[in-house]
Image: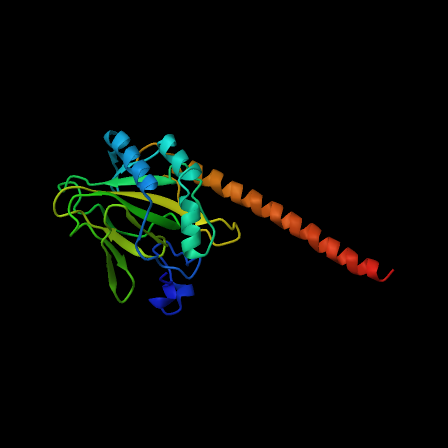
Length: 249
């Protein structure tokens, strides 16, 4: 596992383009291969829905298919795999439009790269290679401050990273197609820093996704959970004080 502190001095003060700081001292994992069942389903869904791909401001993507989202959340086991690799419990992002997307290859006349240099507006991402016609190109490039790291994923391989804090670029293949699956994650612990960043009117991919409405609902749910924890903690503290008081009786 590669930490932010391996590449950045004072990593705690590192800022992305939105002025946000890292949630944890983590940059990216080494490349790892997923099992055959995961790949079979990842490709099957891509093949079923590739005709639904739409070009947005950022890239050519498949998004907002409930059947796909449900599989990755409920059946794939990917959150457990990621959690074991990083040593932190992660869950797939609950915003329905953001749990997954497939990044396809746009017409070169429309966009040179699959996705240009950017920070993710989701906290953590798993990038998985679904199909690739030219294994010598189509790299993922990570900007690690003093160096650029080239990640050359083969079909069936993936990498997990704190995409909100590592600027990166997805190159197109020099020949043929390159399709990746991108799954968005956040720490399961609601008290940890959440670097999800959505603003009103934001629409980087498909029109009509209502991302801001989804974001507000998501944030309200987090506040509700934190409020319950606060109340439980207050009650626990009161019981401890009561125990001390009773000890003097």
